[in-house]
Length: 295
Image (cartoon, rainbow, N blue to C red; front, side, top):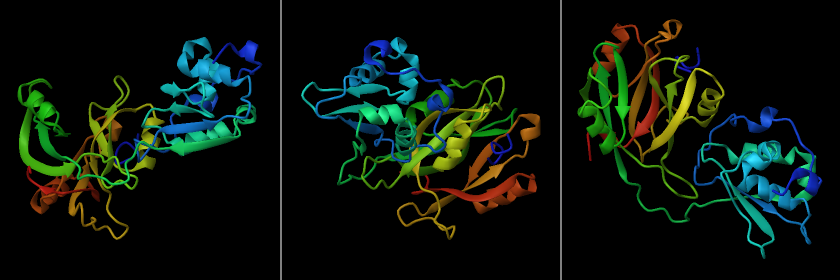
């Protein structure tokens, strides 16, 4: 992908059968574009099926029943009030809850316990303005690699030599926004990957595309790091939307064969021309941000 593309109780007591891990424990094929929407509500029968206890126990203590924990898609927490008619399972925000729900629905035995699955969201209906976020570019003189720092703490850390010698500011800086907790989010996550140590390149890669993120999570060469800031993707016309009108072009150094893939985001036409002269591949505008410079 621009270089990356080239590269509950015990089961026996509850009567719940074991299943192989297989695809039940794999990353989803698409990443979650709304990280706050990472919960699935399991509606209970009336009265609840006795096997519900096994599901709750597996969610609370994965080691007690790893196979069942995998079948319920590895939640990170569970809320199971005694007087409620449902249990709430919370998942890793990077996982696509729609795909998780489809996997669970495909498990006939689980669906015989829970008559219905519902998504729930921690999003707010009215969204306040998202906090500004500064993106500052660095270049490593020896590696000839580029990197975008996305927090004041990270910028200070690099400036103080925390990332090692050789990194220097290029002077390129942009303003974007944090990811928003909205029912209809504005600035969506930018997923950051790093080359898997010993396998992938010594480099980072950024994408705002949930499908590309899902693809990378299911490869061995790239490892997901975090989604530290928000941005938007260009419209189908290739133009950036009004609330994020400033486009960043993605360049790729075409060194996947050397396991040295690196990518650079560029907004200055003169710098873009220089990158083309250096034979870096131009993938066009891939991220849309608020504008150039710090706020």
